[in-house]
Amino acid sequence: MVGPGEHDEPVARSVPGSASVRLRAVLERPSRPARVLGVFPAAIYLADPDGTVLTLCTHDAVRLPNAVVLTARTAASPFPGPAGRIDARIGDGRVGLGALEVTAVRWWTPPRPPAPGDADARRAGRAALRGALAPVRTGLSGQARADLAELGRYAATDPERAGTAALRLIGLGPGLTPSGDDALCGFLLARRLLDPEPGGDRPPDTLGARIAAHAPGRTTDLSAALLGHAAGGDGCAQLVDLIGAVGRGTDVLPRLRHLLAVGHTSGADLAHGVLAGAEAADAGAVPTVAEAPYGPGDGTELPYPEGRSAREQRA
Figure 1 (cartoon, helix red, strand yellow):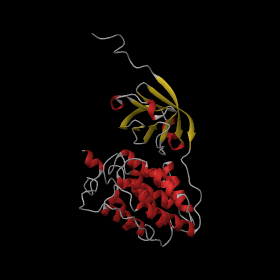
Figure 2 (cartoon, rainbow, N blue to C red):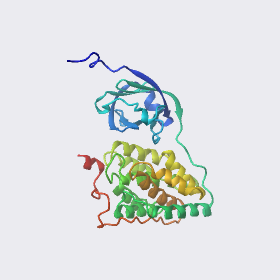
Figure 3 (cartoon, helix red, strand yellow):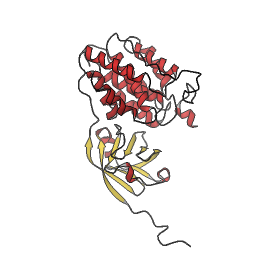
Figure 4 (cartoon, one colour):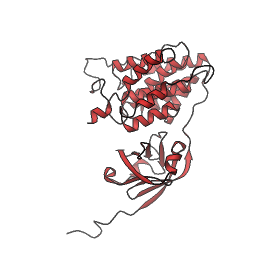
Protein backbone atom coordinates (compact mmCIF):
# COMPACT_ATOMS: atom_id res chain seq x y z
CA MET A 1 0.00 0.00 0.00
CA VAL A 2 1.23 3.43 -0.87
CA GLY A 3 1.19 5.79 2.04
CA PRO A 4 -0.20 9.29 1.70
CA GLY A 5 2.22 11.73 0.14
CA GLU A 6 4.72 9.08 -1.02
CA HIS A 7 4.46 10.20 -4.66
CA ASP A 8 4.01 13.89 -4.00
CA GLU A 9 6.24 16.23 -5.95
CA PRO A 10 8.98 17.83 -3.82
CA VAL A 11 8.13 21.29 -2.55
CA ALA A 12 10.02 23.97 -4.45
CA ARG A 13 12.57 25.94 -2.45
CA SER A 14 14.05 29.30 -3.36
CA VAL A 15 17.22 30.30 -1.54
CA PRO A 16 19.71 33.17 -1.93
CA GLY A 17 23.23 32.71 -3.25
CA SER A 18 26.41 34.74 -3.67
CA ALA A 19 27.83 34.43 -7.19
CA SER A 20 31.32 35.02 -8.54
CA VAL A 21 31.53 38.05 -10.80
CA ARG A 22 33.13 35.70 -13.36
CA LEU A 23 29.64 34.18 -13.78
CA ARG A 24 27.72 37.40 -14.31
CA ALA A 25 27.38 36.99 -18.07
CA VAL A 26 26.37 33.32 -17.94
CA LEU A 27 23.81 33.90 -15.17
CA GLU A 28 22.24 36.96 -16.80
CA ARG A 29 21.46 35.13 -20.04
CA PRO A 30 17.98 33.58 -20.48
CA SER A 31 17.34 30.39 -18.54
CA ARG A 32 18.44 27.21 -20.35
CA PRO A 33 19.07 23.55 -19.51
CA ALA A 34 22.34 22.59 -17.81
CA ARG A 35 24.24 19.34 -17.56
CA VAL A 36 25.26 17.87 -14.19
CA LEU A 37 29.00 17.07 -14.21
CA GLY A 38 29.53 15.89 -10.65
CA VAL A 39 27.71 15.62 -7.35
CA PHE A 40 29.32 15.84 -3.91
CA PRO A 41 27.98 16.71 -0.45
CA ALA A 42 29.56 20.17 -0.57
CA ALA A 43 29.28 21.02 -4.27
CA ILE A 44 27.50 20.26 -7.52
CA TYR A 45 29.17 21.06 -10.85
CA LEU A 46 27.06 22.12 -13.84
CA ALA A 47 27.74 23.03 -17.46
CA ASP A 48 25.48 25.13 -19.66
CA PRO A 49 25.07 24.37 -23.39
CA ASP A 50 27.99 26.60 -24.43
CA GLY A 51 30.33 24.69 -22.10
CA THR A 52 30.62 27.25 -19.30
CA VAL A 53 31.08 25.40 -16.00
CA LEU A 54 29.45 26.60 -12.78
CA THR A 55 29.92 25.34 -9.24
CA LEU A 56 27.02 25.39 -6.79
CA CYS A 57 28.54 24.96 -3.33
CA THR A 58 27.85 25.21 0.38
CA HIS A 59 29.15 28.03 2.54
CA ASP A 60 31.97 25.95 4.05
CA ALA A 61 33.14 24.34 0.78
CA VAL A 62 36.27 25.29 -1.15
CA ARG A 63 35.20 28.41 -3.05
CA LEU A 64 36.26 28.02 -6.67
CA PRO A 65 36.35 31.11 -8.90
CA ASN A 66 33.26 29.87 -10.78
CA ALA A 67 31.09 29.33 -7.70
CA VAL A 68 27.62 30.30 -6.59
CA VAL A 69 27.74 29.97 -2.80
CA LEU A 70 24.77 29.03 -0.63
CA THR A 71 24.33 30.27 2.94
CA ALA A 72 23.80 26.66 4.11
CA ARG A 73 26.70 24.57 5.35
CA THR A 74 27.51 21.05 4.12
CA ALA A 75 26.09 19.39 7.26
CA ALA A 76 22.65 20.73 6.34
CA SER A 77 22.60 18.62 3.12
CA PRO A 78 21.02 21.43 1.07
CA PHE A 79 21.15 19.71 -2.32
CA PRO A 80 18.33 17.52 -3.62
CA GLY A 81 19.13 13.99 -4.62
CA PRO A 82 19.76 12.04 -6.65
CA ALA A 83 21.01 15.19 -8.37
CA GLY A 84 22.32 13.32 -11.41
CA ARG A 85 18.71 12.58 -12.48
CA ILE A 86 17.26 16.02 -11.69
CA ASP A 87 16.66 18.73 -14.26
CA ALA A 88 19.15 21.58 -13.95
CA ARG A 89 18.90 25.08 -15.39
CA ILE A 90 21.10 28.18 -15.48
CA GLY A 91 20.03 31.72 -16.34
CA ASP A 92 17.78 34.67 -15.48
CA GLY A 93 19.98 35.24 -12.45
CA ARG A 94 19.28 31.77 -11.05
CA VAL A 95 20.55 28.22 -10.83
CA GLY A 96 17.85 25.58 -10.70
CA LEU A 97 18.39 22.02 -9.56
CA GLY A 98 15.15 20.12 -9.36
CA ALA A 99 13.02 21.75 -6.69
CA LEU A 100 15.94 23.88 -5.49
CA GLU A 101 16.26 27.36 -7.01
CA VAL A 102 19.24 29.52 -6.07
CA THR A 103 18.98 33.23 -6.88
CA ALA A 104 22.14 35.34 -7.11
CA VAL A 105 21.44 38.20 -4.70
CA ARG A 106 25.02 39.41 -4.33
CA TRP A 107 28.36 39.12 -6.12
CA TRP A 108 31.89 38.37 -4.94
CA THR A 109 35.27 38.79 -6.63
CA PRO A 110 37.95 36.05 -6.64
CA PRO A 111 40.78 37.06 -4.28
CA ARG A 112 44.15 38.51 -5.20
CA PRO A 113 47.27 38.36 -3.00
CA PRO A 114 49.21 41.44 -1.90
CA ALA A 115 52.03 42.53 -4.18
CA PRO A 116 55.07 40.25 -3.77
CA GLY A 117 58.04 41.45 -1.75
CA ASP A 118 61.60 41.95 -2.91
CA ALA A 119 63.86 39.25 -4.32
CA ASP A 120 65.07 38.16 -0.88
CA ALA A 121 61.53 37.77 0.42
CA ARG A 122 60.48 35.74 -2.61
CA ARG A 123 63.60 33.57 -2.33
CA ALA A 124 62.86 32.88 1.35
CA GLY A 125 59.27 31.99 0.50
CA ARG A 126 60.33 29.53 -2.17
CA ALA A 127 62.87 27.90 0.14
CA ALA A 128 60.26 27.48 2.87
CA LEU A 129 57.79 25.92 0.44
CA ARG A 130 60.39 23.61 -1.11
CA GLY A 131 61.43 22.27 2.29
CA ALA A 132 57.87 21.80 3.50
CA LEU A 133 56.82 19.91 0.35
CA ALA A 134 59.65 17.36 0.50
CA PRO A 135 57.79 14.81 2.70
CA VAL A 136 54.30 15.51 1.31
CA ARG A 137 52.62 12.86 -0.81
CA THR A 138 51.51 14.06 -4.24
CA GLY A 139 49.47 12.56 -7.04
CA LEU A 140 52.25 13.48 -9.52
CA SER A 141 54.50 10.69 -10.74
CA GLY A 142 58.23 11.15 -11.16
CA GLN A 143 57.81 11.81 -14.88
CA ALA A 144 55.05 14.34 -14.23
CA ARG A 145 57.28 16.20 -11.77
CA ALA A 146 60.02 16.24 -14.42
CA ASP A 147 57.55 17.69 -16.94
CA LEU A 148 56.53 20.35 -14.43
CA ALA A 149 60.17 21.29 -13.86
CA GLU A 150 60.75 21.48 -17.62
CA LEU A 151 57.68 23.67 -18.02
CA GLY A 152 59.00 26.16 -15.51
CA ARG A 153 62.59 26.03 -16.72
CA TYR A 154 61.71 27.02 -20.29
CA ALA A 155 58.56 29.09 -19.77
CA ALA A 156 60.39 32.38 -20.35
CA THR A 157 63.04 31.27 -22.85
CA ASP A 158 61.56 28.49 -25.00
CA PRO A 159 57.74 28.72 -25.14
CA GLU A 160 57.48 25.81 -27.56
CA ARG A 161 59.37 23.43 -25.28
CA ALA A 162 57.48 24.69 -22.25
CA GLY A 163 54.17 24.27 -24.05
CA THR A 164 55.01 20.70 -25.03
CA ALA A 165 55.75 19.85 -21.39
CA ALA A 166 52.49 21.49 -20.31
CA LEU A 167 50.43 19.51 -22.82
CA ARG A 168 51.84 16.28 -21.39
CA LEU A 169 50.41 17.25 -17.99
CA ILE A 170 46.88 18.13 -19.11
CA GLY A 171 44.39 15.49 -17.96
CA LEU A 172 47.06 13.39 -16.26
CA GLY A 173 45.48 11.43 -13.43
CA PRO A 174 42.05 10.38 -12.20
CA GLY A 175 39.20 12.42 -10.80
CA LEU A 176 37.36 15.62 -11.64
CA THR A 177 40.58 17.63 -11.29
CA PRO A 178 43.50 15.38 -12.35
CA SER A 179 46.87 15.89 -10.66
CA GLY A 180 48.54 17.23 -13.79
CA ASP A 181 45.85 19.90 -14.14
CA ASP A 182 46.11 20.89 -10.47
CA ALA A 183 49.87 21.36 -10.87
CA LEU A 184 49.30 23.46 -13.99
CA CYS A 185 46.75 25.63 -12.16
CA GLY A 186 49.24 26.28 -9.35
CA PHE A 187 51.98 27.02 -11.86
CA LEU A 188 49.94 29.41 -14.00
CA LEU A 189 48.58 31.34 -11.04
CA ALA A 190 51.90 31.63 -9.20
CA ARG A 191 53.80 32.70 -12.30
CA ARG A 192 51.21 35.37 -13.04
CA LEU A 193 50.72 36.71 -9.51
CA LEU A 194 54.38 36.61 -8.43
CA ASP A 195 55.89 38.22 -11.53
CA PRO A 196 58.10 40.97 -10.05
CA GLU A 197 57.63 42.99 -13.25
CA PRO A 198 54.01 42.43 -14.33
CA GLY A 199 53.56 43.85 -17.80
CA GLY A 200 56.80 45.76 -18.12
CA ASP A 201 58.77 45.22 -21.31
CA ARG A 202 58.18 41.51 -21.44
CA PRO A 203 56.45 40.03 -24.46
CA PRO A 204 52.84 38.91 -23.93
CA ASP A 205 52.64 35.54 -22.18
CA THR A 206 50.71 33.15 -24.37
CA LEU A 207 51.51 29.98 -22.40
CA GLY A 208 48.44 30.21 -20.18
CA ALA A 209 46.20 30.87 -23.16
CA ARG A 210 47.69 27.88 -24.99
CA ILE A 211 47.09 25.57 -22.02
CA ALA A 212 43.51 26.82 -21.61
CA ALA A 213 42.83 26.39 -25.32
CA HIS A 214 44.09 22.80 -25.41
CA ALA A 215 42.41 21.64 -22.18
CA PRO A 216 38.84 21.05 -23.46
CA GLY A 217 38.57 17.49 -24.70
CA ARG A 218 41.87 16.49 -23.06
CA THR A 219 40.61 16.59 -19.48
CA THR A 220 37.36 16.90 -17.53
CA ASP A 221 35.05 19.84 -18.17
CA LEU A 222 35.53 21.14 -14.63
CA SER A 223 39.30 20.91 -14.80
CA ALA A 224 39.43 22.62 -18.19
CA ALA A 225 37.35 25.46 -16.77
CA LEU A 226 39.65 25.86 -13.76
CA LEU A 227 42.71 25.95 -16.04
CA GLY A 228 41.05 28.80 -17.92
CA HIS A 229 40.41 30.66 -14.67
CA ALA A 230 44.01 30.11 -13.53
CA ALA A 231 45.31 31.45 -16.84
CA GLY A 232 43.23 34.56 -16.15
CA GLY A 233 44.60 34.95 -12.62
CA ASP A 234 41.84 33.34 -10.54
CA GLY A 235 41.97 30.48 -8.05
CA CYS A 236 40.52 29.37 -4.73
CA ALA A 237 41.41 31.36 -1.61
CA GLN A 238 43.66 28.63 -0.17
CA LEU A 239 45.79 28.65 -3.32
CA VAL A 240 45.95 32.43 -3.59
CA ASP A 241 46.85 32.72 0.11
CA LEU A 242 49.81 30.35 -0.32
CA ILE A 243 51.04 32.29 -3.35
CA GLY A 244 50.82 35.52 -1.37
CA ALA A 245 52.77 33.98 1.51
CA VAL A 246 55.50 32.74 -0.84
CA GLY A 247 55.75 36.18 -2.41
CA ARG A 248 56.12 37.88 0.98
CA GLY A 249 58.34 35.16 2.46
CA THR A 250 56.12 34.83 5.55
CA ASP A 251 53.44 32.43 6.88
CA VAL A 252 54.24 29.83 4.21
CA LEU A 253 53.74 26.77 6.46
CA PRO A 254 50.27 27.64 7.83
CA ARG A 255 49.08 28.64 4.36
CA LEU A 256 50.42 25.39 2.93
CA ARG A 257 48.58 23.39 5.62
CA HIS A 258 45.32 25.06 4.60
CA LEU A 259 45.91 24.20 0.95
CA LEU A 260 46.87 20.58 1.67
CA ALA A 261 43.39 20.09 3.17
CA VAL A 262 41.86 20.63 -0.29
CA GLY A 263 40.89 17.36 -1.96
CA HIS A 264 42.77 14.07 -1.77
CA THR A 265 46.06 15.13 -3.35
CA SER A 266 44.83 18.31 -5.08
CA GLY A 267 46.34 20.57 -2.42
CA ALA A 268 49.76 18.96 -2.72
CA ASP A 269 49.63 18.99 -6.53
CA LEU A 270 48.62 22.66 -6.55
CA ALA A 271 51.48 23.47 -4.16
CA HIS A 272 54.05 21.76 -6.40
CA GLY A 273 52.78 23.89 -9.25
CA VAL A 274 53.10 27.00 -7.07
CA LEU A 275 56.74 26.19 -6.35
CA ALA A 276 57.59 25.76 -10.04
CA GLY A 277 55.63 28.85 -11.01
CA ALA A 278 57.16 30.98 -8.26
CA GLU A 279 60.66 30.09 -9.34
CA ALA A 280 59.83 30.66 -13.00
CA ALA A 281 58.38 34.09 -12.16
CA ASP A 282 61.84 35.38 -11.27
CA ALA A 283 63.93 35.95 -14.37
CA GLY A 284 66.66 33.36 -14.72
CA ALA A 285 65.33 31.15 -11.94
CA VAL A 286 65.43 27.41 -12.56
CA PRO A 287 62.41 25.69 -10.97
CA THR A 288 62.95 22.78 -8.64
CA VAL A 289 60.11 20.37 -7.95
CA ALA A 290 60.41 18.80 -4.51
CA GLU A 291 61.28 15.14 -4.62
CA ALA A 292 58.52 13.00 -3.13
CA PRO A 293 59.39 9.80 -1.22
CA TYR A 294 57.24 7.74 -3.57
CA GLY A 295 59.57 6.79 -6.38
CA PRO A 296 58.72 4.42 -9.21
CA GLY A 297 58.67 0.76 -8.38
CA ASP A 298 58.19 0.95 -4.62
CA GLY A 299 54.47 0.18 -4.80
CA THR A 300 53.32 3.49 -3.33
CA GLU A 301 52.67 5.59 -6.42
CA LEU A 302 49.06 6.34 -7.23
CA PRO A 303 47.54 3.67 -9.49
CA TYR A 304 46.96 5.40 -12.80
CA PRO A 305 48.90 5.05 -16.04
CA GLU A 306 51.05 7.92 -17.26
CA GLY A 307 49.88 9.81 -20.29
CA ARG A 308 46.18 8.89 -20.23
CA SER A 309 43.70 11.72 -20.12
CA ALA A 310 41.01 11.80 -17.47
CA ARG A 311 38.40 11.51 -20.21
CA GLU A 312 39.98 8.28 -21.47
CA GLN A 313 40.10 6.83 -17.96
CA ARG A 314 36.40 7.51 -17.45
CA ALA A 315 35.45 5.73 -20.68
